[in-house]
Amino acid sequence: MAANSDKMLHDFSPLLKHYKDGRIERLSGVDVVPPSVDPKTGVQSKDVEISPEINVSARLYLPKNPDRSKKLPLLVYFHGGGFLIESAFSSLYQKHLNFLVAQANVVAVSVNYRLAPEHPLPIAFEDSWLALEWIVSEATDEWIKDYADLNHVFLGGDSAGGNITHNVALRAGTQKLDGINLSGIILNCPFFYGKDSIGNEGADHFIFWKNFNNKLLPYVCPSMSDCDEPWINPAKDEKLSSLGCKKVLIYVAEKDFLKDRGCYYKEILNKSGWNGDVELVEVKGEDHVFSVFYPDGENGTAMLKKVASFINE
Image 1 (tube, rainbow, N blue to C red):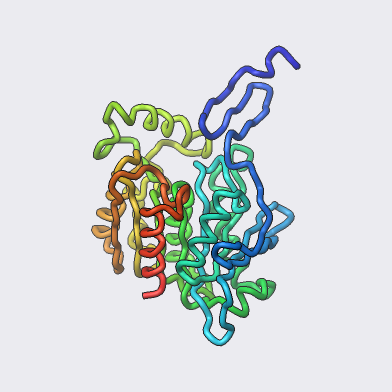
Image 2: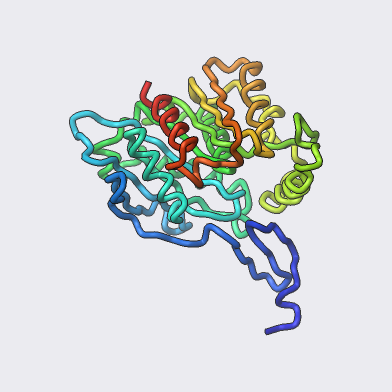
């Protein structure tokens, strides 16, 4: 082994380590499980290629015994992981989507977008928009054609995936995509940030995460000028009122560093002139994306029921 092989260039533990010799070591979210028929929920899944030439793909989900005579809402889901780790094919997201699809009785497309640093932002946003274009294209998969109602489409995601959800929904409001009606978005502990601290972001027990984010953001988006760019700080976005849906559900967790940003998002959205309804739910005693890690826990189950109601009301 070369003498410099273990020297660190960037350390984003517990997500990723980037060594001076160019090696990138992802510390979690690297496992891959095959699609299946889930024995607990009866949810079916399968994998599809969206754009094989750039390695963009997805895992599709169908609830147990879908009825062809009554099409179901379509949920397009974007996984979290700080734009650095995880995939639509990991065991964590396979379990989460199985429970979510079963509870909400939806067809789901879990998008496998490309990750930084090999593919820096805005590539994840472009890949995610490409997934929407694929859904309405003539080549769309038969599960979507036969079972999904494209007049009843929702976007959802956790953490970085919540950020992607917002940015794709904003693009949908400014760049119309024929063939899809975006009904609403679901933001689970969304990853927003800003140059100046708000709420409890400056508290001593959050110093690690504040420093972490200050280093992470220019790493995943080297072209950014500062942490107030609109893609990460919607309060600085003059186009916020153009958000391309009529309702928004935001979940935040009491112990999460990102909680105040989620609350602030509701505030600025209401003040922006956007013509829609936004609801915020804060879950006591929980931390970041608790429902992804424990979808079958008490609070995770309650959240999935709320999401199901939001989609189907």
